[in-house]
Image (tube, rainbow, N blue to C red; front, side):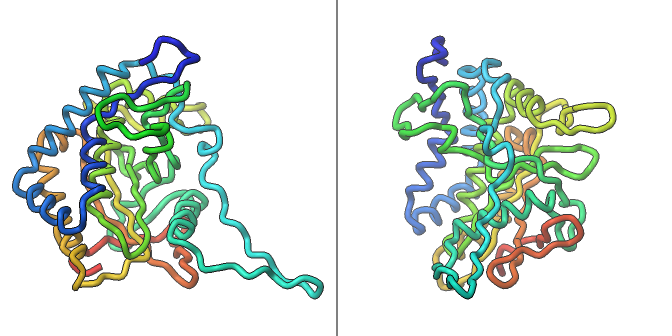
Length: 309
């Protein structure tokens, strides 16, 4: 890290981010070949995951513990979607085009924030509380840039942030990395790789201390860390999908079919399972105009059936 607080900080372009960008640039056919290799040799990804944690720990150390993982704006949660303008006798409502997938995805994030979490039909153990939005594991106090071969341009804080941070409702009170993808053009395996990258970026001892420091709950005894301490920092991963219509003729359907096998292969790797308890797919069923459904004080989800949904 730069020693000059006024200079641009440097952030390590760790190997799992490099792998994510590599896979992101592949064609669908090339990703199908990649998933076959991943099933056969998951230890290669596990080595990248483990190496990335070491790279981040060597570069960051404890230097960033006091720096919040959110900007002042994102700490307040997603902005509410704009309300439709009603027409009056004097002025008709302006015509608006259909919502984009990005807008619909944002509305789901806002609903999760407003409701306070998610509940999963048929899988009550997956219920989770909302904790944060647009959480940036690589955020620094100063303006930052990546350092490393083939590193992308731009601020790491803006390039990589977690869609939704949740907390498991069980006794372990684990942080949950929630990645939300919307629309027909969803690659769940790329979403899984991105979520694993976020785990690697938050599971070092210093980064997990940072996570606990900046996400607290308040009760009659005052503030306390939202996430419990464990022998090793550990996370759940939730892959949220919405607005997807399966096309069995598409090559991308092979990526969906492969998800359960990839999850099993990944969670069989000691380097990963030490920090990832479970990986779940959760579908967000939508009503008219892409509105979420609520169950009590939570957004309703359903387990993804990967070879059907």
